[in-house]
Image 1 (spheres, rainbow, N blue to C red):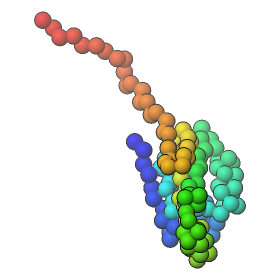
Image 2 (image 1 turned 180 degrees about the horizontal axis):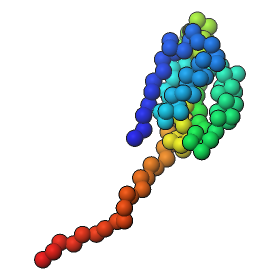
Image 3 (image 1 turned 90 degrees about the vertical axis):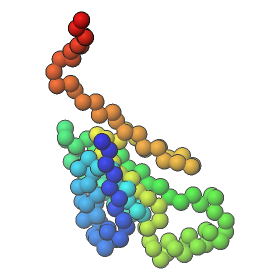
Image 4 (image 1 turned 90 degrees about the horizontal axis):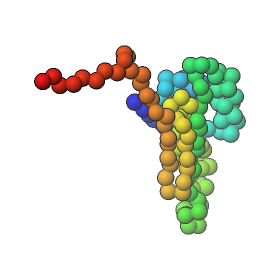
Length: 137
């Protein structure tokens, strides 16, 4: 089963960079896919990747990360100006960040009209030998 956890920007905007990264990494280590409103700063993304690389183990395989921004090509001049003004006021709230454990998420692809999140098959091993039963006559 795949579990998503939404993290609103208001939950992390007052946190320091270290606490923000630790909170997101803790959720991912619980085998959940994070859907975060907004985006991390560039140095926070780099720190998240660096910390993840240090913590890779047989149990924790790493993360898959993708940031989705609003499509500025489809906006007219008025929308672009409002977007720039909102960005000044709201900071890193625009867009969405997806972070998932590498043990669950195979890859994340962004296309102009959609996001595709591919998960790995979780094939459970049979408990005992497979038996076939025949109907007796």
